[in-house]
Length: 563
Image 1 (spheres, rainbow, N blue to C red):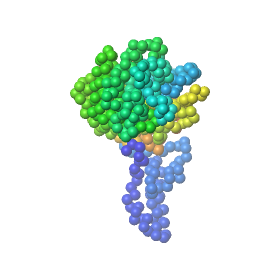
Image 2 (cartoon, helix red, strand yellow):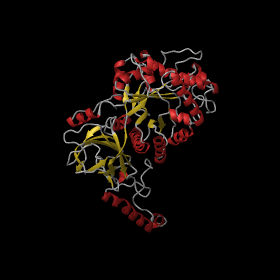
Image 3 (cartoon, rainbow, N blue to C red):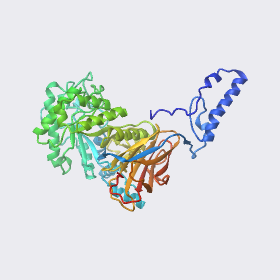
Image 4 (cartoon, one colour):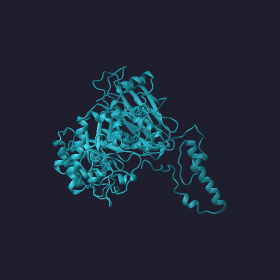
């Protein structure tokens, strides 16, 4: 498993018989074993923390020297197997937008939004890199999830976490309040001004007055919370909101918005949507999901906004999404052009199974949520591994971070967001965390329109993604390739990079490198050595490195994909 300690590369199969010896013989043999087990790796520059050896600091060289893990680690990029075209990197807006959208310091809010959203092109990125200019000061996200709030009953609002009380648009008496959710809408409007291109609307819960428990947090037993008689009303509620955004420019400061898709569910099969939870949520069985999706598609047609289609199943784990979509009626499958899933729990096999289902049924496939805040680089290494597996096996064309920012008045270094942002008006500040730069190693380089390539990595510690940028040939380059590689090991690792699948062997003409680790924040570093089509990549311990590689070959190419 990629996040478990590495197995010791030295055999200790005879150690158990030695530890049974007593007295001087036992001590002598033990000393000999230590020399055999530890001194040898020192000479061979190989680390192997295990229960028979002293802790690494007792024999490792002091910083800044770092030893290299030897072994079969290598990366092979298949230039002859273009896969999906990446449409966007994104983030959910709730709940951070509900907090920072209330800031009165609009300059500071604009600075925060600029760090997140931008639509700079691959062409301009490449020009900046080759001219020695700094990277854009933005993640370059162009997709977002907008949460259509259900709206909690005021007597239960104390249940909600900071930012979790997203306002709904319709009251129990049937009246509509189009001034509601002003804070999240302010952030959405600011994101659109900065290049946001794709917006996915989703619901965590129906309005509280449509629920069995009377609360948008969930049912008292964790079962479905939507009243049986409210399916039509809930579908009409969402369709009406979708239509209002498409027709009323007052909601977004003078512009309308046609949502690219809308879903009435969020992690619907989960058992944790219970009364008293600290956020909105509602359980739906696969059959209930199918029913509400059918109702919503019908209401969207009735409201004249069928150009915004429904999507599902939005399950927490890929296995659940596979189970749910297979249970949907033919009617729902027919009107649902987009499959969306979270990937908190996913094997490569289940990712591939969902990708196959989507392909067979002619559906687009997005990762609509993943987030983490634990482990090296504030969860950045795990984030990198999940991105790599999702692009390689899920074949998703949009990848969405759960929350790019956390509401944290302490502006502390830990949390699920790459940016810590305050919630209280009097503070109105933010601080960039380590995970921000981990995400930037992908989002700022593999720009929308890039073609994902097949990559083989023969190390459980190394995850890798490669893509061809959608740019014109220039300066002798037939193509520009981006490779992002993450190392989860506690020591540096040598990872030779080579290419396969090309009609003619490419050669590396120029290369730039950017690194995030404990001391670097997506910073330019010296690129690795290369000769011909081979790159001698060395990944520092617990790090993510991005290479921007200009490739050429001896004759003029008809396509930058080398096929």
